[in-house]
Length: 380
Image 1: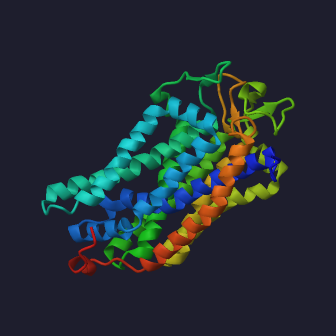
Image 2: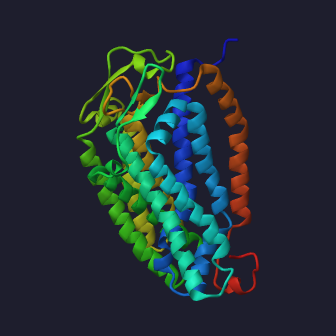
Image 3: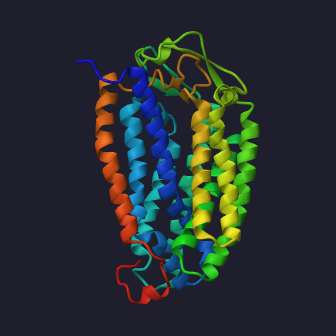
């Protein structure tokens, strides 16, 4: 049966959908992780901390859907990427999963006992479960940009030749800190939207301002360091060819991550959004405008993530030790039929998910207050 969309088009669509899912994850789960990372610092009394926790308490589980969807999409649409990255970075992924397990336990158990030390322990567990994944996700993106030491044999079995501590280089740490700063700004902006006015919002505004400035500086420093990185495809290749990286040759080419912006200037909208959104977020915090701050932090996160994706295209995970093993949009996807069937499922289900999410946020809209903690038994 002839499919209505050709193979290269479907590969591009799924590359774009993966970007949309990652941005959706950063915008939704990002603000509740930002709130978790801010929790011990912006709230000092038990009532303040409960108020902060409940600004995300009703929606954080739903936001996790984007994380699960992202992992499932990589597994189904880009199985080679899933296999190589999850086998090579398994210690880092294990660290993320352990940290993320602390989040549901912390949300559920924190207020079950009145003991101060018990509650303080779970407050820091919520901080750890929010801060560590955000840091590791940023470090992971840094490793993707600088390439990973893996190779594929003739049967496409991958072998990783790096070590856990080798994941942490000056460049990848800058990416990790940028990820933290970006989402702390987003979390501080969310507290302006959902939290009650008062000392907690004032403290969040101060931390958000510092995070916004750090985000601008780290995005700039990361961009300068990235001028020493990059890969290019060498020779002719077939975008409709079989998913076999061994049929393609790639080479390391410092500065190549900026090639796409020269060929397609419209792509510059992504880094402009990254910088401009952070500035708008800062402006919103200074003016105490919650919509402006949250809109700016959202735009900044979307712009920074889009900058990475657009600069690397068509690469998804380059190899630093074998020019025939780099994974790209053209050589690492599922089959033509699989991508088409998955697209039909997405076209049907994604609008339903978005509508349901919008309805949930509409129903739960409104500020969380310390006064409500005394009367609403549904709150944490």
